[in-house]
Image 1 (cartoon, rainbow, N blue to C red):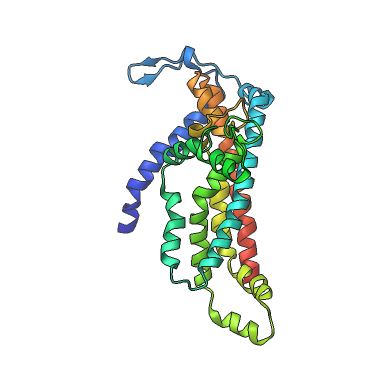
Image 2: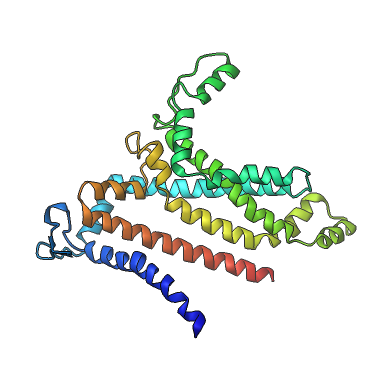
Length: 295
């Protein structure tokens, strides 16, 4: 009984800061809640100005082309960053798993970006990607001509740059998970495969990849959820611009809330929550079935 008592503070904090706000947001998403009818009676919310609107807020946001564009950008960001981070992380893990003398130092160097604040990373790369930034100067040196492209101010390149920064920040974390999985694979499997005449690619395809499925499960789940929840990086670097080129769901929710459209922002938040929940549960089921098939 005593161990269960230790869960009480955690359950209280989780309920107070996650469950209750989620329930309140769900209820308010079906009303006309906005800054104009927001008032309080003492310390409590005044409910007299609120009216039930059914699914009107949800229908309105799905008719909004800006919301659909932000949904598309979010999906593109999540899918692209997940795939590239997996490839980059796996490549780095395989390279560091060869017993290099500098493995510890390189692992630390690659992992450092993942512990940096998004504000620090955003400000750093915003300066690098300016028209007079380091990237254009380096390209000018290699191409022998002046480059003045505004990477974050162009509709064609803004989202791609944010994706690249996200990959730079989190590839080291993905690498660490893969590296832990690689170091848990017994060398006896590779020795037996070598005796049977298997080459390096065959050993990688039939031994390494199948035994890394648990690591893939962790990385894919974390990357996909993180991709759909992206906010800080976009907010710091472009704030959804230029135009709506980098607008994602969380930045649109933030802007709607800032403008006083509280019920619509709550509806967008619920849509994002449902979307992430469905994706997470589906991915978890698929990946766990693959793990079970390998055992």
